[in-house]
Image (cartoon, rainbow over all chains, first blue to last red; front, side, top):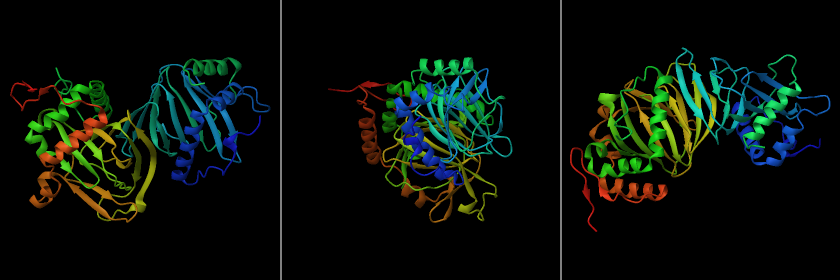
Length: 180
Length: 234
């Protein structure tokens, strides 16, 4: 596949969280508005040579890897909720940027004493970045879809590929949510 | 029954539960713009609310509803001015905020040092960077450190809980200057007079808010507390 505007410019500087946040928000905002590219990346995600259908899968949601470019430090995912997910508190493994496309994501950030510091019910056009290490929980439902940008590949399933059925389930849900 | 009259006493010791209750109440109020409009216009006849309202350098704050003593909440409407700096701060109380118009460029920070006179800007580490646009809603513990850089005219509803401490920290991230914010009961008459919102100021601000929100003035003059409403002549 030919390189798009996503792969022009400088790599994302993930060493500087605030800079990466600003860059990442611009990228996701633009990608959310570039329906043609978003659709192309989603519908070809399971056909890329040598990189077939990377992503993550749980029973109540999953992620389709839309782009993985290590030289640009660009790893973009489409998260899709397939069920009601009530997240448990855990440390965020790495920083990421998110743009909510449909539905809602409930974030709870826990302070060092395990008390709740911040609660938000994130809905479109929600746009935010979270630093790795943050103790937090996230919940979603069947209407939730979001674009995610990370600085490294996120693989939470073994093997690190979506099956054809998993990929189709996520893609179809995203399509029916009207974002593609 | 009006939405806020029906809101029962809030337990802010459980922020998660308080978030659910208060966010739902504020969203309900926004879904009933006539009720929100009437609260804003009703301040005209509520000197007790106007007395608590403030015209500050960075924003104006109109107190719309007072139930702090009996039900643990007070509702304010904030209108940002065109003076936006990154000022990490915490609050003297827990809050729920709903963005009505405009945007908050919102940052949340972690500070691993005690929040006292020795703390510095370099101790503040941003961990959550957010664009809070119209419709966004969040709830924060009073110890949570945030900054809001706003677009001019950004309006938000702030539903606060009871006072949890005497003073709250603020610091200018550019200059490094650290300052403290106190409640009205701890401020001098001169300090209170400097920020007090006059009736004329309120009326001008209210009219700007109404224009921005597309509100017509109420057809019925809103009564002072305990008095019946009367039809507006003409």
